[in-house]
Image 1 (cartoon, protein in one colour):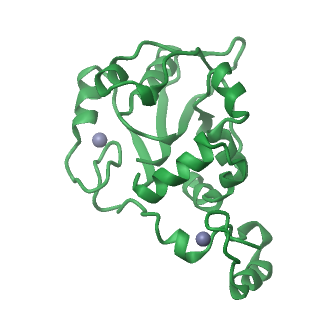
Image 2 (spheres, rainbow, N blue to C red):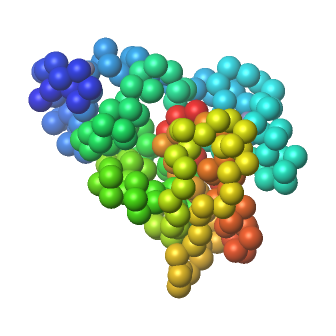
Image 3 (cartoon, helix red, strand yellow):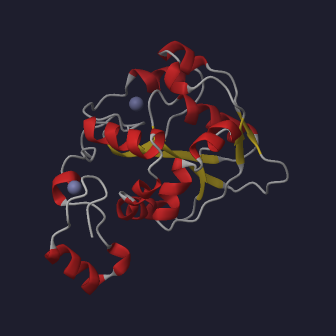
Length: 221
Ligand SMILES: [Zn+2]
Ligand SMILES: [Zn+2]
């Protein structure tokens, strides 16, 4: 077995203990690669969106609150250079095997949302056609976590090619699929949280549709 990220062989002791304890807990990356990712310090982040290294509410959250959207977000990892590279290889180069890298961490982190219905942020049909997979449902599938795919996205200009102002103000691209039974509590899940505009848009859509409790979650912030 080799590390999914650097392709070096995983050391035998790790493999042996994996077999011993649980095959489901198998390690997919070596310790050296693993150590490059940075968990967000639970005592030092924006209280509403988990932006790392600040204890005050950040400007993005203040912006959303001024537009009437309450931010209630949790993120696991900071968007450092290792995470940036990971996302680029997984999502933009389309290496689908990399969905496994955070499977255990995600599964554990999502346990506290047991009474929430998990809803992944969708891709537009065009992006899906290009990438061949939704990176968010890939992460959730790897984590063996159930979700409901109740949203659709219209194709528009790519978020990453927009500037900050455009991103914050981008108009409604998302809608609910027809004939969905709406859950009472939703945890919206995305891979990255940048300005929060995608999740704020969808959150507003779900609240407008009558869902009372909507929280959001991302792998990185
Ligand atoms: Zn490695
Ligand atoms: Zn914030």
